[in-house]
Length: 517
Ligand code: ADP
Image (cartoon, rainbow, N blue to C red):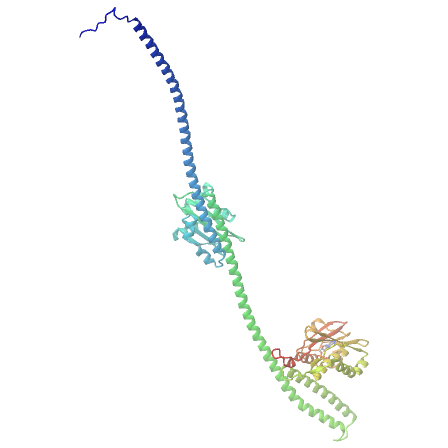
């Protein structure tokens, strides 16, 4: 290849070389400068990269944290939802069982759906019977044989039952290793809550709720929820038992009351029958006695007149006694007849409006000789505003005479008798008292003085003859006027007979419907 030849003398290359060198130096310098600059930039870039990496790592950490927090939040939300559902179920259940007073119905309200809503697959309720044996009342999730096994095993586990009786709630969350192992082995549920049903009278039973394996852990919230449910269940069971007891007692009481009422009405009927027979008997006997007695009295009187023939004085005296005794007998028979007639309602009270004062004045006059003889005073204390009262004068006359005569009989000389009267406007009746300062009547005799033929065993009665019929008759007459009679007395101080008389006699009362009399 032909070489290029340059004429030496034509071109001096020195300046060219120098220029080239300079250019080279310049380029190198520029390059060096550029490279140095790039290296700085690279360093900066590296630093930035490191920073970015750092930030990226931090962001990554934060992202992980956020994901973790999100997961936890989701879990918490799930737990919250579960608790909310549980609370809702518990609230509804509480409301229904607290309104139920039938034990059987309470147990029927708790079913599989409720257990599921509470978040559990197994639910067992055992209650104590009267003989301390356990009885299965709710069984969800266990087969019958297993429930029976649990029941009999629990009955034998004194330590375990003792803890439940003390109110301990066992749960898979906080039970001791030993207790947990025992419960898991017995109930075959890994996650559980076992709570006593505590009542005022002690432990009424046991509530178990649980999940088998691969289920979420029991939480503190679950434990609280189930403890509340156990409390509510126990309370409702106690209420239903109390209600049952009250109901049973009421039933028993009602049966007893009905029985006693039947017995009493039968007894009353018997008494009425006997009383009727007694009245009929007295009435018949009195009638039978009255006729021959009248004859005896008539013949005695005839003999005494001496018309049949002269009679010696001694015989006359005996005849006189026959007469007196006959009179007494006639009085007794008449009283007896009156009592039986009034009791059987055969005597009608001929009530007419009366002013009481004149009648009492007449009685006081009539009894003056006896009062004087005995040395006893009689005072009539009748207010002027005493209203008109409707009564049968003949019959009320007998009442007052009888009461005042008795008062004279049983009051020693120097004593006083007072007849008091006052109106009771609220009850539309007059109230009378016949009070004396006599010997009085002992408490045990007080209730019997109105009985027919009853006479207190005392000195006066031994001396003075009487029939024991006067008070019975007086009380009958007052009651036939729709009044009441009773007695109060202090031995040695005196006796007061009280009685009431309605202002208007029943047969004369105004008819409220028509206003007619
Ligand atoms: P009698 O007077 O004929 O015995 P009553 O029926 O009138 O019968 O009285 C019954 C009994 O009540 C009397 O025997 C008497 O023992 C008692 N008694 C009645 N009134 C009084 C009185 N004012 N004070 C004390 N005892 C009385």
